[in-house]
Image (cartoon, rainbow, N blue to C red; front, side):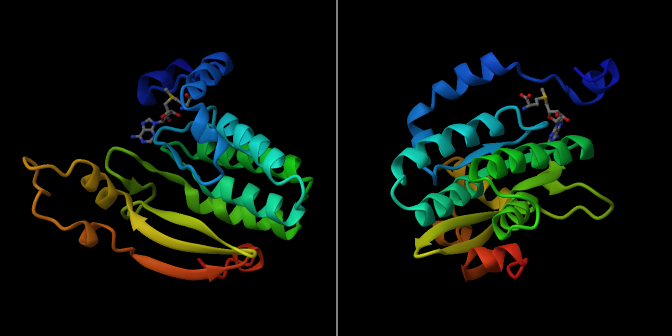
Length: 209
Ligand SMILES: C[S@@+](CC[C@H](N)C(=O)[O-])C[C@H]1O[C@@H](n2cnc3c(N)ncnc32)[C@H](O)[C@@H]1O
């Protein structure tokens, strides 16, 4: 806990590391894939997202030990597959910093390196300062939260498409007795933006934002 007031106002109670490890053990097989996606809708400073990233990076090292090129690109893909939403500004900043530190230490890259810059850009997109209940961003003019679907095309290129969270959430509740029963999957899976094919350098320079 940071303060009793924050607990009362925002339910801010952090999960202890041993409990986090026991919980992510339950989805252990997913942590072996660099592209398996994780969303923490009340991510705090990243108590879950950090260990998820650590485990993914560990398995990538073993799998791509013979190619540093692929090892680095899959490490960035692992970061791209981690998503968070958090209401409080200090927590969101801390969460991004913590995840960037894990990535940077793992790849031995420093501030100014293009991999460091690319990771910074990815985190500014994937770790959203917003309200998971209203599914809108924080600030004076809230807008619907969008998440980027990143995929690795191979040979150093990624593809990014953006989707609205509220639309994706509707899809998961689509059933015969819901408001969305009449909607077609293709309507819901239409990206709000397709950024096309991107290199690490494009992402680092913010060419896709
Ligand atoms: C119980 S804490 C959990 C933090 C972290 N997941 C952990 O386990 O250590 C809940 C977090 O959700 C945030 N939060 C509260 N209401 C929220 C909302 N509507 N949308 C997004 N985050 C919210 C709080 O600021 C707090 O950081």
